[in-house]
Structure formats: C-alpha cells, structure tokens
Length: 275
Image (cartoon, rainbow, N blue to C red; front, side):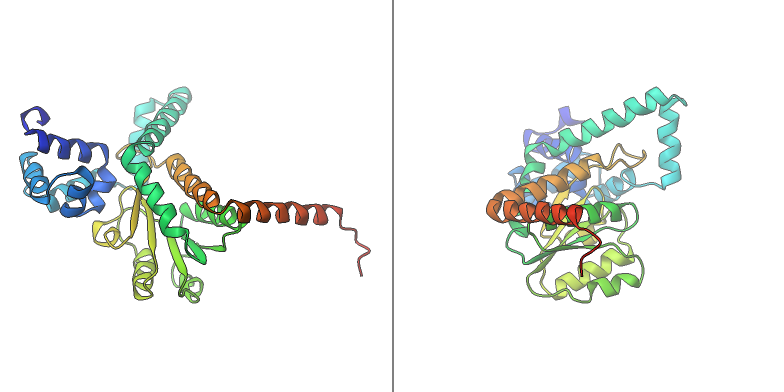
C-alpha cells in the first residue's frame, strides 16, 4: 500500500504505523503538526490507506490495541508453544521493541514536554489503578525522594473521591491509563479540567475522546497488539520523567536525598531507651 501513496501520504502512513498510540490520541491537525504537513494531507492519506476517514482509522487502531486479558494471554502463550525459554525470549524481545520505540525522536519529544509541563507544579499527583497502582506509588516515592511533593491516586471506585478531595491550584496529574475511558479516569480528567490542572498522560491506547484533553501524551507501548501487557517501557518513561525533573532542580534533589540518608541513619541507630 505505502508504495502506491504520494510522498507526503507515505510520511503520514509511516508515522501512524510507527506510533499507533499517538495516532489514536491526536486530532488531524495535531498529527499534521507533528508530521510537518497539513491536516488535509493527513485526511487524504488516511483515505488512501483504505479508511473512510480518521474516525474509521481510530476505531481500527483501538480494536488492534485492545482485547481482554484472557484473550491476550491465550494469544501470547500460543506464540510460545508452552516453552518457558520461548516465553522469556518473547518478553525480552517485546520489551526491547517498546523501549526502542520510546527512544524515537517523537516519543522523546513527548518526554521532554512532560518534564516541562510538570516542572513548575507545587505538587504532582500520580494516577494509576489496578496493575498500574504499584507504578503510581513507586513514581510518587521517587518524586518525593528528589524533593518534589507528590502523592499517588491509586484508589478504585468511590474511594478515589477522598484522594481527589484536596486537588487545587499548583497541582498537576501524571496519569497512567489505557483502553476505554473507565469511570475513575473520566472523573479525574473532569476534575483536572474544572480546576485547570495540567494533565500528562502515559498510555498506549486510551480512548481518544478522553486523551485529547491531556496537555501531553507520552506513548509508552505495553507490548505487542493483542498480547499480554508488559510494563517495561512505561517504567522507563516514568523514570525518565523523574530524572528529567531532578535535572531541572539538582540542588533540591541532592538535598532531599541527603536528608533521606540522614533519616535512614537516625532510624538505623535509634535505641529503644528514647524518652
């Protein structure tokens, strides 16, 4: 197909093939700006690829990036032929592909933009529920160690309301979310928009209707289409953001880590005869 496209359309097709999460999240105008062409060219290229329009392409991308966990595991195990060695190879190869995609110029630019958006904030709230809750807690801890006030938003259901209660001016949210616009992430986006808080989204497939409200979208792949989700690239993206923030305020990061060491030493040397 790409060989029959005009040069400008080939550039659009190549970008979409290499960055499906971004193509799902961005509008025609945003895609055009990233690719260096016009939104009309983007629309014509999508139609030349066999789709009725950009919404039709996005439906296809959403379907290709989705699937139930059981189906994903079934497909992944089918590839390994019940071989542990093949499963290990598959995991390593998949993670390498995801990190290599993150190292591309477009993805790096989103990481730089994420750091720039989060740097001025007085506090960073890291959202992640389900399997992502552990990542949210880990990142909040890393941010705190480098002197950045941070807290995890990791509760499911109505319990999330308590964690969102004190959101206010000077806050921003770093969101880990995937797939459909489930109620917790929809509520968080709505509250962040109401309060005009910056939103940085790390995703590979979040519904476009919600993702378009993020200030920055970092495309971190969770593995191959319709295969089990692997979070190595997500972790790399998050640690890159934390390190980028530390680099922008090195003295505060070092001072905070020095204080952490002092507190650890005090705890390690504490005797039970105090008081």
